[in-house]
Length: 257
Image (tube, rainbow, N blue to C red; front, side, top):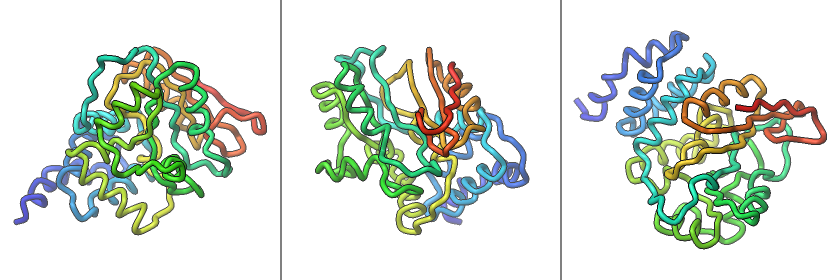
């Protein structure tokens, strides 16, 4: 038997539990996602997990397991030279029904100019005309080829840098390939658990965060997730026109943690 498939059989019971519509514990979710990221090279388990979890509805613990897995496999940045209390990211979920400019990307430059270090998690468009990564590519940034060392240097010297954690983390290489296959090559334009929390993990510690979401129903889920992750304060928000931003053209709902 193929060694990867043999390892994937270790999560058969957890995946079956999820497909049957049952919630997973954070530990079960972490084990499931770890095995998928590391051993699922053809993407069948990956697609099953994404579809089953989103159809059931993501819980705080399931998203926590997702974030913990990414953090475990991601490269770590050196904290020297950074003010930990002034590191943040303005990335949100994306995926809003109302299509606009990339608000969080524009705002990131303003926040960085105000003296904060903005570690901008970015990826290409999935459900919108442009993603944050598309903007940086248009600026001339060779996005997929950015290295950990380049991101660290630019963050220290400039105060803002784009990056996508799976691109700069060797242990997340397979996860990156699966995402590109699923959303890039196959062009599957649907929301998924990846929208909700892919942009939350970064190899530097953060204490404060604002986070726009494409749906009001996830605001408290995400606020509780930030609490469990040890954030001192966060704001999650949604505007009723279908925008994952604080908006003046549609009533915003904001949850403060």
